[in-house]
Amino acid sequence: MTHRLRFKEPWTFAVPLILAMTFSAATLAQDCNPNDIVLDSQADVDNFQANHGPCHIVFGSLTIDGDDIVSLGGLAAIEVVGNLIITNNPVLTQIDGLSGLTDINRDLEVSHNENLVDIDGVANVTDIGRNILIWDNSDLEDLDGFTRLTEVDGSLEVRNNDTLSDLDGLSR
Image (cartoon, rainbow, N blue to C red):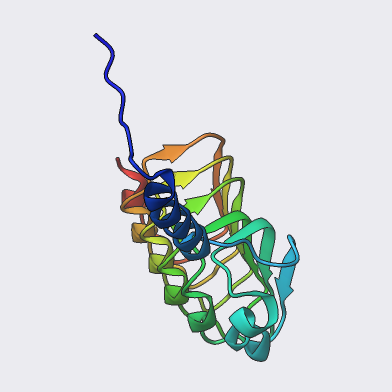
């Protein structure tokens, strides 16, 4: 037996459906412009949404590389990135501003951040599409920021992190 929905006036169904679809599309995550973004100052981080958004997805690489970057708070709305590269940030001590991030489609590189103590800012990331590279972060104490990470489709390379005492954050 086949059941069919019938509407007396087709437009009475179509109008609310079209409005719902339009509203839903507007509230979905939007991609940032351009695809590859380099933030090399605290002002760039703070003005991220004004300069590249409003957006939630960086399809290409998001590179954070600046002598004066102390906070990543301006990146809180980012949910997905292609590559995330956090490198050469001498005064950055934590990356908590990335707490909205859930997926890294390709690589995560955290390198040459001499005062970075933890990577707890990536605590909501569940999937990394390729590699994790953690290099030359002399004050990095732990990798506990990987508590929700369930899948890595590539390799893990951890080297030259002088104060890193264990890899317990990866123990799943």
